[in-house]
Image 1 (tube, rainbow, N blue to C red):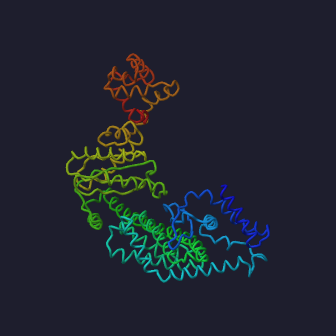
Image 2: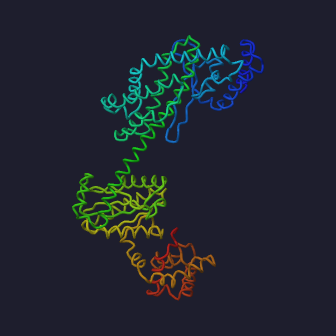
Image 3: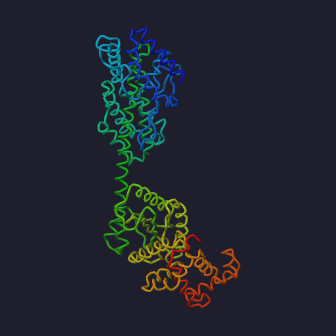
Length: 538
């Protein structure tokens, strides 16, 4: 900070004694520089330095631009290690904006014929000279850009030569033509003017080029362009050095705009491709789970997807806290979570034979897992447990149907998987993965018209008592059932004395009229436990 204030003092003296400005005039002309220092000084630590090509004359310092949310970083402008005071102040006060001299106020002291106006005109002439030289080197510059992509970015290094020459080179050349046309005028290009770059980004989706790689190419494009500007600048000419500073800011602006256009084109195309694939697969799933698996329509749709349908499928339903059943439209956050789930299902539910069918239906991810023998149900459950662990951050619950032969019974299998996932969501005591065969009794009880009556006559009084007295009658009853009705094991699991368990079972009998030692009464109490989600944390 001390050095900046000293530099500002030296500049003030220069304006007064060398250019014969009054103190007031010098102060007015120092205002933009002072403002620039106040704004840009905290960012000075990110500036890098670079040697001038021609002589040891100082050049420009630049900054890394934070691009918008979808752009990872900006272009780096290299500067000389030993910059003089004036170029450094100007470079720090500039980020794609006119020079300080261009922003000086007009009036009697800055009118035509003044040193400032003459210097501004000289700088603009120098900008036109440099851009004129650059415009005669567009094709060699574009070729150097393509060579830089190939040597730096793996996705481009592995690409075929005809792809680089036929597609990448024209996009780079078009971007150059648009940019050079604006460097002289100082006008900022719009994303619409980079329509060819936007279209090229959309094509990269189908050419297996990652968005990060394409944006890296855009940054290299800006770096090579800046190096070409330096090569077209005569460092020994003061006006051209000043013009290079002006061009540097404009190059930054164009790289920023070009990156935004590229990111928009890539992401829009990626969204379209992903949606189209899901719509087609969704139609196939809808036809299968509705019981039309044997129809010619289903087989024709499968052939269009280049899928060979298996004879038998296990239905797997995955539900997260982001995707609620019945929802047809999803927010961006929900779409992100659902896509993560889809990719997780495809990566981890790998069948021994056949093709896994995956899609989204009303906020749930549905997978059809092919099988040849009913014994493969155990493998499918094991894979689903691993999937649930992978999707733990989404609080996913997974339901698995039973094994049914043929495509026609898939409608019943889908209903079973939905029932299983409902139980998994409602009663965490069964864990995040629930197979329908494991909760068959639960399903029967849930479907019974007497479910509410059973719940009121068994668990409801115990819940009320626990809430009022902060007791643990319901957890004790659950532990008693899980321990195989063994008092000692139940006491160990609850970390209490067996006599405490005896007392609690007696209290349960008093509150419900059902004796846990009588088989029929115990059965009703157990059915009541299956109807409630209490104890999910145990």
